[in-house]
Amino acid sequence: MLLSLRGLGKRFGSLQALEGITLDVHAGTVHCLLGENGAGKSTLCNLIFGVYAPSAGQMLFGERPWLPSSPAEALEQGIAMVHQHFSLVPRMTVVENLMLGQAKGVLKRREFGDRIRDIADRFGFVLDPDAVVGELSVGERQRAEIVKCLMRDPRLLVLDEPTAVLPPGEIGALLDICRRVADSERAVILVTHKLAEIAKVADSVAVLRTGRLVAQADMKTADMGALVHAMVGREVKPLDVALGDSKEPEAGAPAKPGFALVCDGVTVQDRHGATRLDNFTLEVRPGEIVGLAGVEGNGQSELGMVLAGLLAPTEGRYFIGDTELTHAGAAAVTAAGGGIVPEDRHAVACVTAMSVAENMYLNKLDRFTRFGLLQRRALNAAAEVQMKAFDVRAAGPEVAFSGLSGGNQQKAVLGRELTLDPLVALVAAQPTRGLDVSAVEAVYRQIRAAARRGVGVLLISSELDELIAVADRIAVLYRGRLVGERPAEIGERGAIGALMSGQVA
Image (tube, helix red, strand yellow):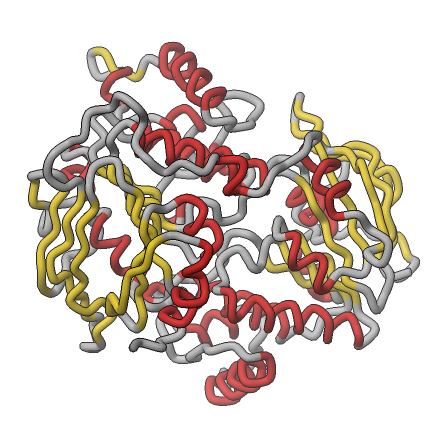
């Protein structure tokens, strides 16, 4: 037995985040942890890694009492963790980040760079040690986090939603890493919402719901349907069935003229002169959902930054409705009716030190100010309504945004953007990243409803099956160029996948 938890509990003030958790993790196994957003999975991982101290129960690691005082102690004793949210310094290079806390004495940059390349080559990663972290895509930053963890050769590897930001081709490589780590008489705790990953790699699985352990199973005999039911407390249908087959505008809703979003030859070059987005031209009509598919790192991040008003294009123009926003800032995008759900919510979508209410009304706080003072009672009351409408689960609207799970943060950001008035176009980049199956369904219901009201939607995602279920048509990015477009139909999956891999007729 490598890790044993007995009656483990954690309370934050009046909130009982975990209660009575009892489970065992054996060396040589991959133990998957399932649960809805806010079920307590990240809290449990943080107890094991020494971020928090338990309020009740005990832990054993290597058959000895385990109560780490800090993550540093956990690392020294052989537990490494990849968190949901990145811990890299944006202005430093990959190799400089990975040297932090590991290099002593004379800094051997070349030696560390070689180690990074060795791990990347061994496990199929593409990672440049000399790249500046702030210029990497979200997927590339996640790879750096994973390599940083693997460099410590841990006895127990804790991965909190590690595949949420990885393109499909790299998910398999990461799962292979999990298997190889486990086969070397170590153990892996893998938190994920993707059931296909569990079926492929897990030896055992545990399900949390509202802070309690509600199911455990050996994967050799596990019933996947029963696990999903245990996780959400009800039957969950496939996404296309749950959303309904119709993608047509709501009956009786008048068709709006013109375009909700227009990109005309948008080009982005980085500071080294490399073209990251090349002559991107696309039109989105009111009431239409256009999916943008592509393996991450092919220009999606740059496009999202341009459309959010956070990056000026090198060439080209873009419009929301009739308003040109090419050289305007984020505030002008909001004023023109542009709702933005960015792929990296922590970096550009929220202020984690502020309250949930403040974040949900971040772009319209002026509604709650009087004589320059914020009317918090009115703000919290409005936020409570929004939290209920978008199923944002927290102890209350006044708690810090940082205290929410990643999925609840994402739902809060989506709710804020969908309630813009007016809302002309919605740009949603990876909107279901880190969400459980139930929350994915809820998010797409909200996006579909917005389209029925006449909002034009650009949906950027690496989840091809989700795009097919939700979008009206799918365009494909490859190496910064728009290489093709196909109807959002299941029969087109192979053709879209071929375009994503660069197979252009």
